[in-house]
Amino acid sequence: MKRSEINAIIREMEDMIRKCGFHLPKFCNWTPAEWALKGHEYDEIRDNMLGWDITDYGLGDFNKVGFGLITLRNGNQHDPRYKKVYAEKLLYLRECMMAPMHFHWIKSEDIINRGGGVVLIQVYNDDGQGGLADTDVLVNGDGRSWYVPAGAKVRLEPGESITLWPHQYHAFYVEPGTGPVLIGEVSQCNDDNTDNRFYEPIGRFPKIEEDEPPYRLLCNEYPPAASR
Picture 1 (cartoon, rainbow, N blue to C red):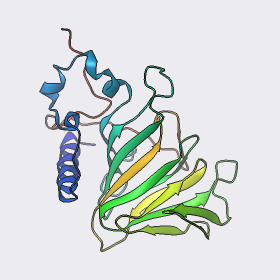
Picture 2 (cartoon, one colour):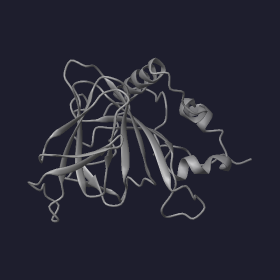
Picture 3 (cartoon, rainbow, N blue to C red):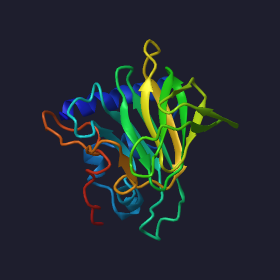
Picture 4 (tube, rainbow, N blue to C red):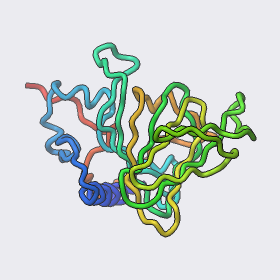
């Protein structure tokens, strides 16, 4: 991705967040220059990859396949200093975009439509060998349980949610004509380096072409803690 694309989607997502009445923690608004002054008191942010996370999944076509994300809070499965067993994210999709089919080995999560258009979550069961099973899928959402056919797209209007379980394949879409969507994720502790199983092999973090200075640093770009 070009840095200009990343900067543009961050500004666009910030505007959507304001329209939806959501407030971000202050660290999400720090500039690269401010980050250079932060000491070890902010190691939790660095170590647990909190903050901005813009990805095209290594496919180079962000306007079709990609996500704008912010990790607001997270624990760490590999570091006993961080005892949180939960995580929270905000996600953003333009109407023309989707996020690819995947499941999580360990993490359960609730996906919530926080505002804007209509989210479509396509679901499959794992067939036990990493494939898509041709079996009905149990859907849990907002206190209701029901079954849908394999590959069905579960429709979430603003305020509605779906619970996604380990080994439950899912992909994200936006219903055409409804506009961009701000999505919430509330989950178990999150580890994007080990817990994602994509149906088709793809990347997770983008290669960046630096065509302009960064507006915000991404969660894998923070400088080392400043000495005091």
